[in-house]
Length: 221
Image (tube, rainbow, N blue to C red; front, side):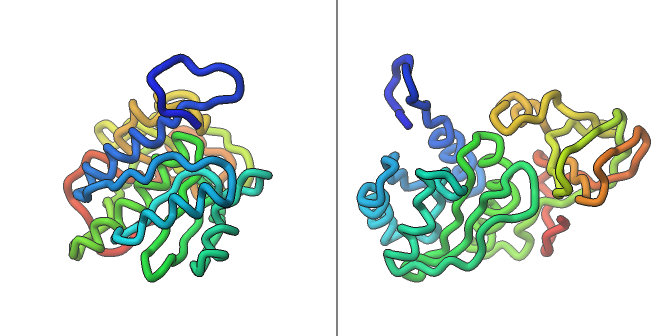
């Protein structure tokens, strides 16, 4: 990962999540403390995690899946942290982690940009609002009528990026977890249950409204 203002070559990846999450955290009402980009080594991760000693909430992105360089879980537990949960049957964003590090709540988000944004909306934003004392931390859902046929893959609960208008919902376009425009164009997340691999036109589903100021006390998903 690299944050320099230059064109990257080879296997380097621009850490767009740093800027996205910074903006989402501020929009959620918190003040981000950027600990920087850790390298894919246990030593670098340990050094960066130590910087969170005064944080109210620790959020990481990437390093929580099952690849050779996904070291966050191991480093967290080796540093005295406690892993409470890892992986959720959802798409995008299955590799999510929850735990504690020295009493500080930790939420580990996936590295793919859209996965990070969706899981932020579902888990981090409500956590920020709860820590701020809000009694209604969750975005509300509304019933919508699906305006186009949808075919999905594995039996997972899907949160599809959608545009909701006048009670109807249509997708923003291709739903790949690296397609940032799918999230940039969305004003809602369309919830498709795991037992619904195909969604015919006219189906009634629930959608989480992303630009709605109203909130609810319990997670509606």
